[in-house]
Structures are given as C-alpha cells and as structure tokens.
Image (cartoon, rainbow, N blue to C red; front, side, top):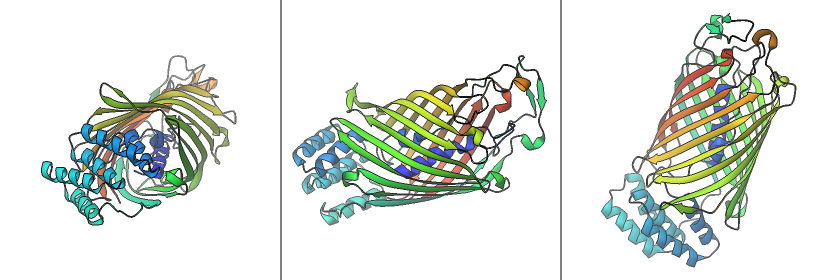
Length: 433
C-alpha cells in the first residue's frame, strides 16, 4: 500500500466519527491523523520481512557498497523465515546487487521446496529472462480501488431514543426524534492515490489522493476527500528520519466541511534483536491545523507526541504499536475548551499463505475537556470523549498488482454525557489495482 493510500485512508477514518449527529451543533472528536503513515507495519502480501534489514541492503546497493550488501544478504539467507516470501525477498535483492548466480540458486530452492503460485513464478521467470539486469524502477506509481459496503450507523447517531443523563445533570432524561437515531445504509466507494519521487534514493516524494463514498439513501452523508503533500526521508547515522507536510479538503453532503494542514516529523532507531527477533523503536511528532468553514467555533490545532515500536511476533507476523500524548487546542472558544489526553494504537500483519494476508488494527483516543460543557443542560459535567475503532481485513492477491479484500470495522465513541455516545459497524468489500 502506497504512502498516499495509507494517509488518505487514515484521514478518512476520522470522517466517520465527526459527522453532524444529534448534538446541538456539529461536534468534533479526537482526530486519528496520519495513523496509516505511522502505524503500517512493514511487509508485503508475500512476506513479513524486517523493513530495516531490507532498507539497509537496498541503501548499500544504491550507494555502491556491494561488499556490505552481500554480507548482509548472506546473513539474511541463513536466517530467512521458512517461507517462499522470505526467500523471494533475498533472491530479488541478490538480483539488485547483480549476483545472478546467487539469485538463481535461491530461485531453484523456491521451485523445489515450494510450489510458487502463478504470480510468483511469473516474477521469477521474468527476472531470469532479464538476467537480473532489470530496468530501473519507476519513479511514480498510481493505485486505484473500488468498493461497496454496508453500515448500520451512517449518521453517527444513538441506537436508543431515550437518553438518560447523569444525576448531576438538571435534565434527567431526553427523548430524541426518530431522525436523530442511528440509520443504516449501503454505499459504493472509489479510491485513487499516486506518488512521484523527485529526490535521489527515494528521499523526496510528492503524494496525492482522492477518496469518495456515495451512500444510496442518506446522500447528505456522502463525502469526497482530496489530499496532496510531500514526504521526505534521510538516513542520519543509524537513524532513519522522515517528515511529511500535507493539506486536505473534505466535502460532506456537497459542502466543504473541513480543511486541514498536517505535518509530521520523526525517526526510527537502528534495528536490534530481542529474543532472536528484530525490533526497532522511534518517536513521532504530529501537528494539524483544522478549520471548519460552516462552524468556525470548532477550529482547532491538534498536537501529538508518540513513541512507536515495530517488531516481528512470528516468522509470518509483524506488528507496530504507538502510544503518546494528545493536545486538542481550541482556536475559537469551543464549548468545553481545550482537550488533553492519551492515545494508543497497534497494528498486526499476518501472512496466511503466499497470496493472502490478515491485517488487524486497534486504535483509541482518551481525552478530557478543560471546561464545563453546558451548565444549563448538563450541570457541572465535563466531557471525556473516548473514541476508537477495531478493524479486521483479509486481502487476497490475484496477481502481482491486483487484489481483492473484505474488511469489517467497529467504531465507537463513549462519553460522560451519554448524548454523545455512539457505535457503528461497517462491512466493506473491495478490489484494488
């Protein structure tokens, strides 16, 4: 999955939890910004290889240090996981280093020990045909996707018409009109994302993306999102530093709902081994300036400081976790004032076979308002929104480029004021190429 695809996917996840709902005005909750960029574990549909080792070998090859590259490849070959994907990674890197004999030896091992699926065999035959003298990789890429699905709560509303408030609230019970209750709907979706490398060694990349979802009945909740930005990365000593600057615009129900300017900077430390498995740690700082043209009182600046870790749980499973501090600062005297709290996220990728992959993703934000929300309606209660999601995705590769997937996601928002609580389930089936 490309950087632009992951970024626009992560930004769209917050759309589902920030739609106008039963509140007196449009409410904004904690933003799940850039999680796709920061929280996507390494690996392909064929292997869960260690990203740091692969990057180090590639950098050595690009830098002309073939001696170091070959030394690392020999070690990788000896410690490669007992699966076709891990051996294929090693063989292709031998090719990158111009070592045709070594690549052929590993190719033959793949063919005799495993029964490579047609897509893998096609890649092996193509590489043999070129004698490892493959043309230089493209400096640009474009990906597309179509999808269809169902949600049981398109409007982010509560499931019950009677809302019981805490004892401290002057009003003990609210009865909601049917139009404010959760409503289900089906939808179709379209995704497009592209990247163009403009710096040497993939140092600088321009990214862009478009995502649209059209609901069949509740069209006022249909949305379109456009994103554009630039990312950069640089190896300094033993640390890989990276940064991102991106802007986005979100249309909801045919109207401009949100604009955002997002920045991220961070680094990964050198990979080490823990209990015989590679692991690495890093830090990220995120900042977003958010504007809501239809409701400027909710304009805000979001700051996050995250620690992150990536490791291999098993030969076929990699994981990436992050946790940190969050500050959601109001810029227009938002009701409830500033918010502060914590976040955590964990994502795993498991290779089920050479063409099928299972992804799990859990994320949650826990925030607290600084001020009383509304003394007339809710007494001295302060909001403490806790929002998150859990998704399960199974993806099947059809060939080297195309794949199909099915995904189910559970979203939730809890709060000290029950009026703002909600949950939803989304079932999604898609095709990517």
